[in-house]
Amino acid sequence: MKIRFWCVSLLVWLGTSALWSQASDPGYKPATRTFALKNATVVVKPGQTIANATVLVREGLIVAVGTNISIPADARVIAADSMFVYAGFIDALSYAGIPVKKEDPMMMAPGSRPRIANAANPTNEQAGIQPEIKAREVLSAQEKSLEDLRKLGFTTAHVVPQGRMLPGSGGVFLTAGASADEMLLKDNTSMFATLNGARMVYPSTVIGVMSKFRDLYKQAEQSKAHEAAFMANPAGLPRPDYNQALQAFYPVIDKKQPVYFAAEDVKSMYRVLNLQQELGFPLVLSGLKQGWHLVDAIKAKNIPVVLSTDLPKAKETPKEDAKAPKTEPSSMTDAEKQQLEARAAEEMKKLESQAATFAGKGVSFSFATINGKASDVRSNFQRMIKNGLSEDQALSALTTTPATLLGLSQTLGTVEKGKMANLVVTDKPYFSDKSNVRIVIVNGSIFEYEVPKAAPAAGPAAKGAMSAAKAGGISGKWSYAINAQGDIYDGVLHLNEADGSVKGNWTSNQLSGENELTNPILAGARLTFSSGVVMQGASMNLGFDIQFDGNSFSGKVNVPSFGSFDIKGNRLDAPKSE
Image 1: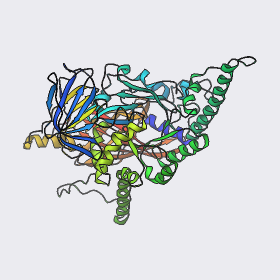
Image 2: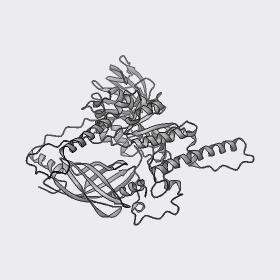
Image 3: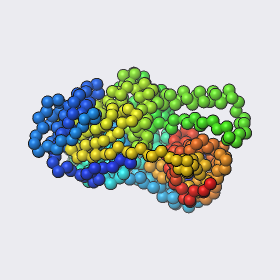
Image 4: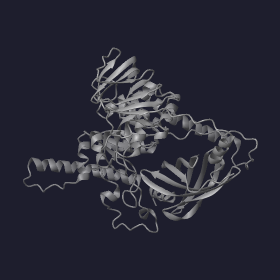
């Protein structure tokens, strides 16, 4: 049994309080379409700043930027004293606005899944091959993910459909609007591809996906040549078979459309680069998490890069508690523990400094939120900056570089006359620890946000309640949902905590049975544990790392050799009182 199938099977077992002012409707338009942001520090582009400047906007366009701007009488004046104005940020690869498709449990549970008549030659839909689908056809303007992105300062996103091998083509969208068509800036921007195999049918393995991509590409070349010959002179030629999936490759073959190929790890990058070298298609390496390994090869080939904004949670160091019960010593020696911790710290350092490594090599890059959580994006930027990335380099990756990559540099990326009025206004420099996004302007539509109020200091009783909710009050039943490349697996996590010791198991809605927690460790509000699963005679250990916050939790599930997947959960029963 192929290891990719094992991974798929394993996943079955897993089964700012910001307020809008006048802008609760994403389609909000101000009473006047002329307004001025006055007396702000305007960051025109990375490395160029104008102090005490005014930005004048009319009908969704920037009409003037400078210190001596005449403000018309009909303009709304927005006092921006001591604030900072940036060009709206651009997400270079995103699922924002794409509804999450939940996997049909009947397709996953081994005892009940339907038999597929011809698994070796499935339909394109069954195989996850639908490059003809456009993001504009599946994007929903009502998805909260667009709002979450906008609150961070993103005014534009290159959005692609979710799916497996070939989910569809991407488009560039504004992060506000009443419909996909209203939000669309540029259609058919990219072909999106992954190395994710299909469910229960060919191609289900990475090698199968590569072979299938190669086969489709060659077929598309032949189909394109046949159509061209038929159009030029149909006499004596059979009518071409007009295949939408193959026709979707035509712009790629003509080198008018790049393939944004998701390749997080080193093996994936090698495979994608080899495929590109063989076929010659225009490539954008996307969602990189281990790109530093191949930065020199990427630079030599001059391949555009989109780095992931997703970083592992920074390791917590629990405080020493003299009253805490002593745990049994593990079989690992202190020297072995130190070596393991040193390797983990070194790996974390490489992850956090990946962007700085690319910048240091002179390789331009953009950022993608495609596999990250919006709530972590800003803190992850700060971690990258603390590990060598300059603020100007980070800003370039959010503005000028993706604008050029997407062919929109004449419209987006800088605060200049004639550009679209996509702007971000913050009360301190954006990348500083305590800055707040106060205003986001999307194509002239204004979204104003209040500064989140600090929670009042907790008294002894409140502190005791919080401690129980975060550390000692995790006992009970918790629902969970795991997002694995757009497929959702859910079930129930059962926990029993006493004096810092945790026991429990988890069940899946996709099949019966209980799975025990192995070596659970509770440190503050963080719980880590593993769970061994045996499939087709092979055993693998899944690693869980979750953070509790009151009656909910979030974190990651690690599947060896295949990466980490987001997990979220909520309490199903009332917390036990002390």
